[in-house]
Length: 212
Image (cartoon, rainbow, N blue to C red; front, top):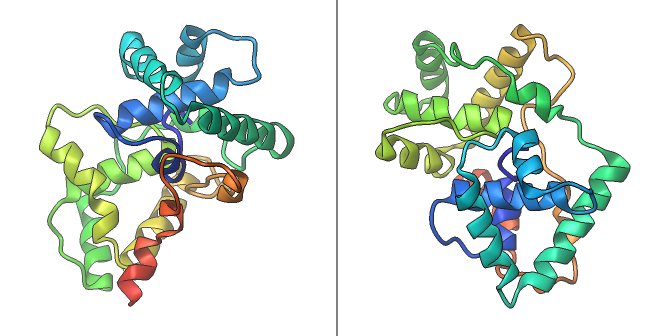
């Protein structure tokens, strides 16, 4: 993915600056791992929307961290897993997905009615869905909107989450992608035994917290 899975970035590094930069840098690092390509080539392949110098600076911070040996091992394990088992999502196809018509207001209002959810924040929900579907952070000049999209996961009830994922499946099907899940990430068991900067946060399921 252009932005590495959030379940991974939350474990591999302490956030320092925008999360999109960190996730882009880790995704570049993952692609470079075990492949004979440069960071510039990896960024081109991933269609990274962030400036090369910014991503390289973020990678340098990781290299200079005392946690780097464990982070490097996590990247190696993940790269090996993907090499052997692959991914159920064709991220190149997802990057080319036309999302301009995602979640019309009528669909959103129906979802809100069926799940007893608040209807404000449609644009933020759209950004959230786009990032989940194509693993690219949509360009937005409105920093408040981008921040609101990042907080959507806290707002999700089990019913709203399921409704949005059902809509995502329908959206993919309408755009010729009927053989992939809306989102996916490799098993976090790959990190077993590694002394990573942050531990255990991948096990916190916000959806389950809403059930409590």
